[in-house]
Image (cartoon, rainbow, N blue to C red; front, side, top):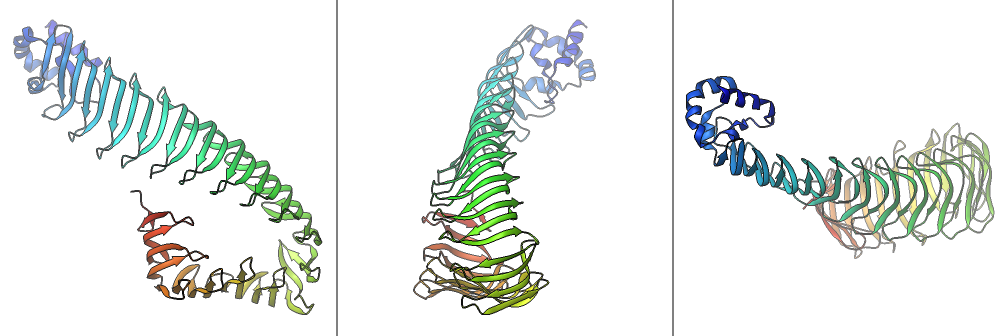
Length: 484
């Protein structure tokens, strides 16, 4: 009975993850007879199926199993491990399988745990992890996404990501490289656009941008330089145009301009200096034209004030409420009153500072409510004319034009969605037709370069090929960028 007690005591050491009981590692050729004699009692005490013992292969000696062997699920011939043993534990090279006979690990073991080099596989058989293990925990390694593409190059300490590492987009391009602590970005790091250009460089804390950092446009020009807190711009900072000229310098809070600051035109001339609240001008401030002349001086938010055109002529004289025109009169460049509003309601025409028509229609609650809104290129050519319905733009008839003035699109939008639209290339040939949100054809950038070629569904680009401004293409399937 001593053999039975010895084996029963071993139950405390059995790995609970596996149904198979590893008691067989303590049986040798000389004890087979005792096994047969005690088999009924053993099966009752240990819930062991001795058929599984017959399925075991390998060499045995008293006190433990050494050499090559296999493990099976209880009451089945399903293999869950094959490899090398020492003193009854997995040691050396081995492979693990799941209940569906699929490989889930291929690598090295020490004292029953993953140790050394190894690979892990996901449920669909794709490589998930390759690298080093120590005492069953991951170390320095590469990790892959569900379809087997490289996702991160990382280092684990005590099972958590620590040290330097890299992250990748699904398409394989580098997305981030930097330092980690406890599985999160901590310390210095860099983010990249898919095209490989630098997007951000700076410091992180608990996975978010923190302290000093820089952001860049896709063309490599500096976009922002300053302070961050919890992933948002916070503190002092500077914003730049994509031509490198300073656009804003001042204070931020929770990602928005807050406190004192200055705005500049893209030619470097001062446009505004004053106070901000939640990203908008609020409090005392001054506005200037590009030539440096004073445009507005006073307070913002529920105050009286005057606005002037580029040539210094009066544009609006009245009252603002929450930054919105509320009571007053507007004038065109010839000094003729063309607009009047009272308690947020009115009708007339509004103009840009250079005198071009901006809006013609009805105002309600201080907002452009029903009418037509106009946009222009820097060349002064008309870019678009869009219908505003019940305060919502791109909600009715619309026309768009290329940068050379040729017709680009005409038709109807519905709540900002292309609904009934005809589109044309720069040669005036009909290239896009959409009816009730669905259609087929080509879309172009303002300069005439191809933007999309394919199917439109519910007003969205659905299936086809999209192109960036540099001509780089990417497949679109069911409204999503393809992972393949």
